[in-house]
Every structure is written in C-alpha cells, then in structure tokens.
Amino acid sequence: MNEKTNLRHTGHISQTVIYLGKLFRMFIFQNDWKVLPMSAVIAGLVSFAVGRNLFRTMEGTLTGTFALSCVCIWNGFFNSIQSVCRERAIIKREHRSGLHISSYVAAHLIYQSILCAGQAVITITVCSVLGVAMPSKPLVTPWPLVDLAVTLFLITFCADMLAILVSSVAHSTTTAMTVMPFLLIVQLVFCGTVFPLPEGVSWTSNLTISRPGLTALCAQGDYNDLPMVSIWNSAVKMENVEINGIKPVQQALIYIQENNLQEDFMKKTAEKNQKPEYAFDPEIVKSSWFMLILWAFIYICGAVISLELIDRDKR
Image 1 (tube, rainbow, N blue to C red):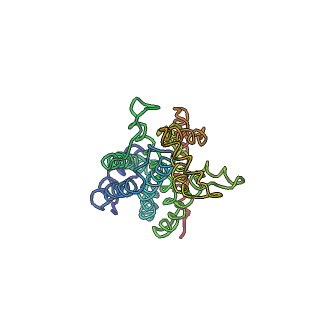
Image 2 (image 1 turned 45 degrees about the vertical axis):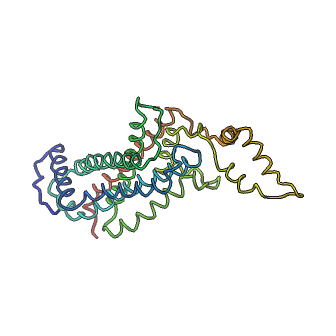
Image 3 (image 1 turned 120 degrees about the vertical axis):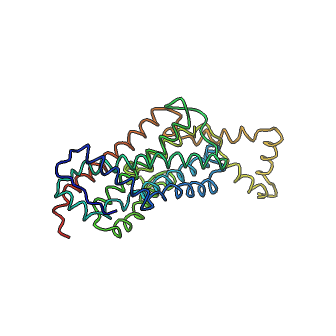
C-alpha cells in the first residue's frame, strides 16, 4: 500500500503508531492475513506426518520437534521476507522527509510479534485437534501449554526478525525470495541434531535458530523420560534371522514378551540414549529462550543499521 505520510515533524512514538496502523491496513486490504490460515495448513500436514509419536517416544519427539521448529521458521520467514524490500523506494523517500528508521522497524517488530503469537496459538490448536500429544508437565510457567506456546512464538519471531534483516538488505523481492530457501536449508541442515555435523563444524549449530528451538521443545516434552522403540522394532524385523540353525533374536523376543518385559526393554534402551541437553530442566528451556531472544535482537539491530544507510543506495 503506497501511502504518503507527513513525517517531518513527527516524533518516534507517533511514527511508530502511524506505521503500525499502515501495517494492519495492509494486513486487511493486501491479503497479508493469508499467513494465518497457511500456518494452520502447515501445522495440519506436520501433525498428520509426524504427530502420532510426538511427545510419546524418543524418536517421535526428536523428529516431531524438528518438524515443529521447521514449521515455525517457515512461518517466520514468510511473514516478512518481502515486507521491507517491497517498499524500499518509499522508505528511502520518507527517510529523507524525516522518517526515523528505528520507529519504522519498531512498528514491524510489534506487528510481527502479534502475527507470530497468533501463529503459535494456531499451531498448538491444530495439533491438539488432530490428536497430537502435548507436554503434560510444566517447566517455567505453571502451565505446560504456555511453555510450549512461548517456545513456538520465540522460534517464529526469531525467524521473522531474520527475514526482516534479509528484507532490509535485499534491494528487490526477487532477491529476498531467492535467499530464503538457502536460509531455510541452513536452519535444517546445520541444526546438528537430525543431521549430525562433522566434529570440526559442529559449533555452527549454535548460530542457528533451529538448535535452541528444538532443544527447548525436547526438554519440555521430557525427552529423556520417554521410551525408545526403534531398537525393539528393529529386533522384531530380525526375529526370523537364523544363525547356525538357531533364531536367537526370536528366542529373546519370546522371552521378553512372555515375561511382559517389553516396556522395561524400551525404557532400558532409552536410558542408554538419553541426552543431557534435553533434560527436563527449566534452566535448559530458559537458556534456549535467551538465545532466541538474543538472535532476534541482533537481527533487529542489523535491520536498523542497514536501513539507516538506505540513502547511500544508488541502485
């Protein structure tokens, strides 16, 4: 929406309010509201694909929380990847007329935070309706769903602020949309959990949004107290394997089943695969939240610095 605003004698707070109003009008009249139903569709697809074992088994939790992190990052990127670069010429003109870049970015920050909060609530609602198990024990707040909502919000918001930074640096929507898939791949591959990284570059996972997000989600889901089913399932597939005319795996399975030791077996295998970084500890969640807030702050500062230099842009 190409609105012309008189900003020469307007203060920082007034400018923030003016641009916030503009963003909400764009939400209504330029169909920016479509990101909300789109987040519901994506949450539904993820729930259908990986929701059955989420917060029920170790493997299901690791896969499911990774997918949830990807959903939040995807939502955040799409919220704002084009929001700044699509009106770059307007920003440059209004900056010369008295626009405070900090006010402009603050308006986006407030608007996007509301959008991200709505998407977090939508994601939890869709997952719950589709029968996905939710964490039942609180860690930071008295309510486990509030803990989960805060984590989903911070992942989405942090990704949103990264997209704001990219949109502030990019000179066209085409450039921004070209960069976005690369950023998404980096978040997925360099998370360092689902795809283990070589030891020499494992530190790069600390630079991603997905790593602290996934860590918080696994801790909230009490990952280390969940059963591990993959070893049992693999053993079942091998029960007919013969060695010197004997089926040792089948004999072991029969013994376990006859003595009702299946759950004990899965708990024991889970104990051998516990990860200290996913412990049911509020300090782990708080640390992950802090990292997401820190990265969001860095991205916001980068966006402000980039736009403050917009007058030097001759292209």
